[in-house]
Image (cartoon, rainbow, N blue to C red):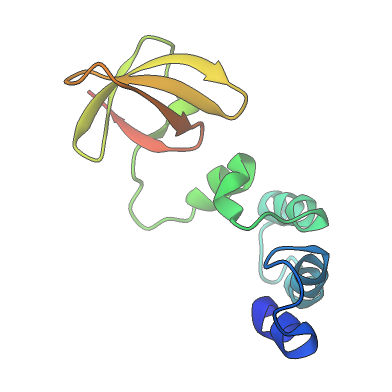
Length: 127
């Protein structure tokens, strides 16, 4: 809806996730930021997120982890919960958790030896 509002007002003359979109997104979210809709712990994380929203809420690891508590079927542990050196499964591939680089872990795929950056909030299964 925020994209639609921005397009109606500005056409294609602004960035897809620029200031105009961020303001439209905030305006749309404010009426639903209540304890009637969200539990307090989630509400705080959403309120923090909408101060400067990213193009994808998945980039906010704390928000993703808070929301995952309400998934009908838990997908597994968060990668950040595993100790370094742990082996885990993600999308039917085996990895070994290595070092943290800001918001993602360097993980080594065991069959190929290739290194991948995987989000801290990725839900994985212990192998």
